[in-house]
Picture (tube, rainbow, N blue to C red):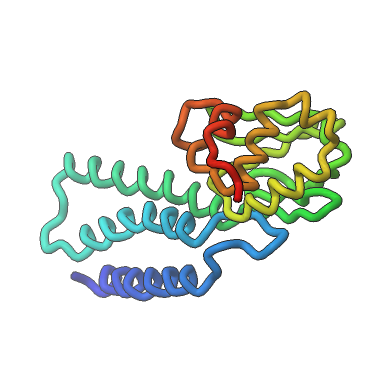
Length: 207
């Protein structure tokens, strides 16, 4: 192994533990008024990138170079994990929404920062195929909320209290999603094909 390969391996061995240390040092659940991905979800994103880094390190320290056919397969594997994991890392670490009684401040790595007033909400829609709640304002701007985010109980409660009642009544699926968020039962939104209304009906009575 030459000096450059050794340097890369050393960087991997140093950077990966530091990344996990920084991850664990953060809180698992977002603070009140904040919606974002939990530590567990961020850890999953890093875990998806780690195989590409480890495979690269193994290739660099190998005594014999890969055969041409193997090089293509390994390169594809590395790019696959870097591509999928990289998108997850950017999304999971860069998505942070803040909310209060007035509205929502929406921020993702893929869209410009924008704001929503609860009083301006004109439509709620649950996308069964994409697995997210779409909130539309009077100007037609869409705000997409994933059930994988943390802190949805507070967001669901606040949205229920301040979105116009007529909008909630006209959007039974969207209103059901807010109720599932408020009560902390969002797993079924991701894993089940049942409608949100059905999932709400199946919830145990509140104590």
